[in-house]
Image (cartoon, rainbow, N blue to C red; front, side):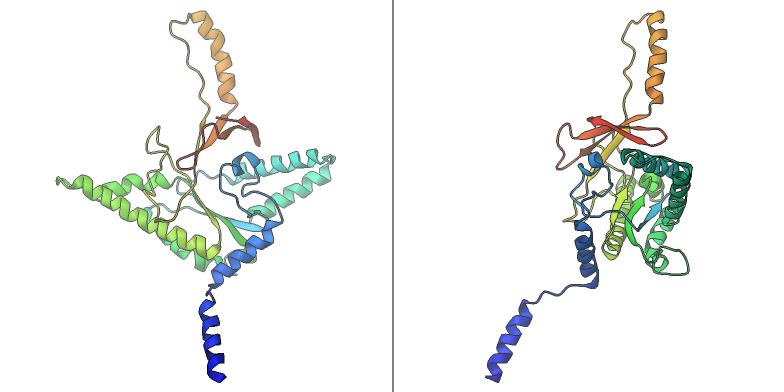
Length: 299
């Protein structure tokens, strides 16, 4: 009888699947946010271009890697304020001085949980990524300890591409191969750090980059991702203003010039999904003014 119980116990133990703490915490977050019904970005048109996600984006913190100092806190505050005002008006609430004061305080409080790092070299970038866990889990360095990380965003990741290539340049016939291998090795190190952080923090990772060609819409780095990882790629560009027709007369050109300038000033952009899983016509057009206004599906 005792031997039989041991056999049954051994069989049950073999059927138990081990789970790490990171996986358990991730599952709990998904269950907590599933009832919210919000998309990842909170913009229906944009959320429609990425895989379904239950991350709500509330009571969270964001990490931004900004090597070119393009990220503007002031501009973000303007967009947030504009969005809040729009939501209040849609809800039929009167926008009074007290309400505006409360919203200003809310925006200021939120900005505290946006952590911006500005590495100036590739090695500094990797060092920053490696040190993030120590920084995030320290109660003395910031006030976001009790918030989850919603997103790790790397702006202008192509900034260091040419320095990576030049670091391996030489006068030998194998220079091109050496440059390619250097970039690939750097890409592998980068994706390894990003995947480790994404798993540890249960957060999304967003990279922005200029395209390596005007037609393929592929970034300079990473050159590839590990097997089994399929990133979602979105292309964003300013809506093109039509050129003057051939042989246009000066009078017609002068009349159209002002109209064209008005179109340029509208700051209209288009975004759509590219690569695997993309469908023709899937995307949308938006304008950037004090806030962001979604126009229509496109491009």
